[in-house]
Image (tube, rainbow, N blue to C red; front, side, top):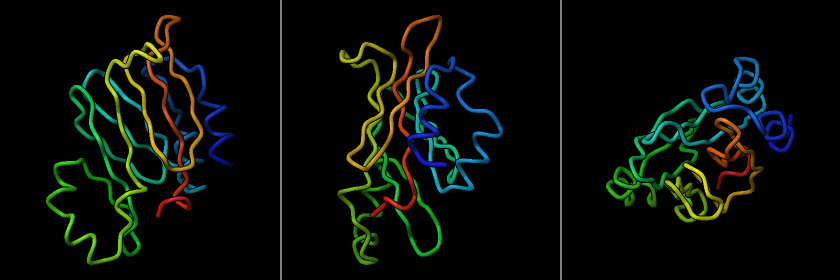
Length: 142
């Protein structure tokens, strides 16, 4: 399964029913990470990585490979670890994910943005756009 195929499968789902257990398993098996906003204060990452980041009024997060593991951290933790990460040769520019709370375009609760190759999907709530999320591949992480 590709990131585009998974995004197409998720697209149009209702808030709080974003992913099935089968979707999470497929994502994990294929090295895919689904990223979306939840509630008014969370950034969710599911699939090849399972993590929740506090995102009150939005957050910038970073995801990267370190040895044989995937590491996700918010901007505050990232700033503290920056010198160590540079020492290990981690590309600090390309692996940024932004969770924007209440953007104007599109009008919704959450907009997830990144410069990484990605596919987008929409999560709905009562017929309205709730979140525009993304699916990324572990293979595209720098």
